[in-house]
Amino acid sequence: MNIETKREVFSWVKAIGIALVIGFILKYFVFRPVGVLSYSMEPTLKEGDVVILWKFGYNFKEPKRGDIIVINNEDKIQDKSLVKRIIGLPKENIKIKDQKVYIDSKELKPDYTDKTTDSSKKIDIVIPKEKYFAMGDNRPNSRDSRDKSVGLIDEDNIEGKVIFRIWPLNRFGTVK
Image 1 (tube, one colour):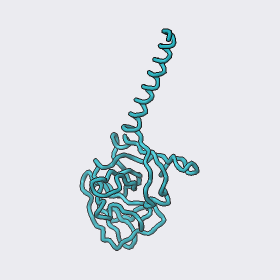
Image 2: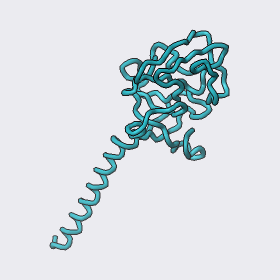
Image 3: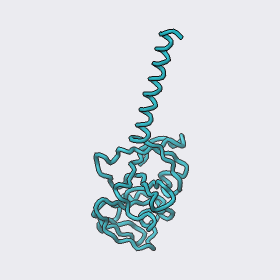
Image 4: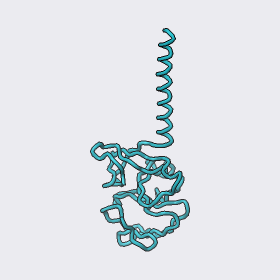
């Protein structure tokens, strides 16, 4: 192998190595694909959808109502990551009655769903600092902050914000 061939091979190995390092950094520290494993976010997200999680989403700003997030909940339940929508923010009073959600005595608008909210479980709490109340858009069929197996979401357990759907291709695009 002559010197020019060795340089060409080294150049290719270096380019592939740099691409792998950049890909690793992006996947583990910036963006991550997440599969939606249940129907609790329908109609916004369907079981089998694949979304992109922006991991830096909350490094520079606080989560806000309406954001769709991925919650690391592995210490509480089997499903390691849950995809839910932030409904209640720290220090707010959340009340569910008459099949509606109230925040600080005002009805939640927009409600982010076309389904009624089960009010058989009495919810009337003030959310502590650094905690969030999250619900699925499919309110009758969602294991979320209303359920003791999930509870209020610690800020540290929010993995990031869902920003984009990449699968299925016919629904490719931003997620709201």
